[in-house]
Length: 194
View 1 (cartoon, rainbow, N blue to C red):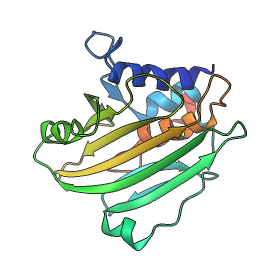
View 2: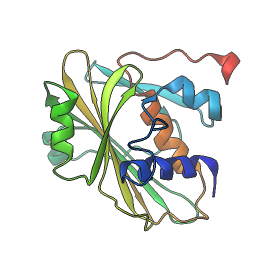
View 3: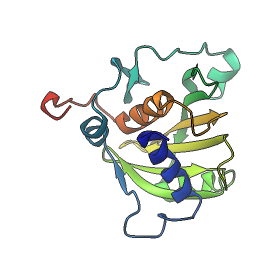
């Protein structure tokens, strides 16, 4: 199993309450610099701005899905989807969830459809990660909700289907790269650390 997919599974397991969620080794912060320092820039990408408020670095080769009027009415701002050669699929949906008072409010809302949630910081944005998976069976979802400085909540929903030990790491790199780059400004990439 590839290193990055293993890390995503570790996050999933920590959210599921198996190993890391209550320990001192729990993941407390994710930054884009952590991503590209560890993995380089494994894909060419571009900064996307949504709502004139949030940015993320998206792989140029990741297909953007068309948004329907219904999706837009539900606050969906962007959607991406890809399937690798082994048949594993990643779907990423980014939406504006509206104003929230705090990450505690976000955590309470996520607990309505997630079995586990943890507080985390993503590029200095307070955030909550959640999952509805209680065991790894090849299909799982990870939710990340970030709270901007003007108290607006944005959700990134990552759905993985048909993942197995032979799955290529590309889809995980896409998901983790986008998640780790979520910020209120386009972030500088220190090429000396890539």
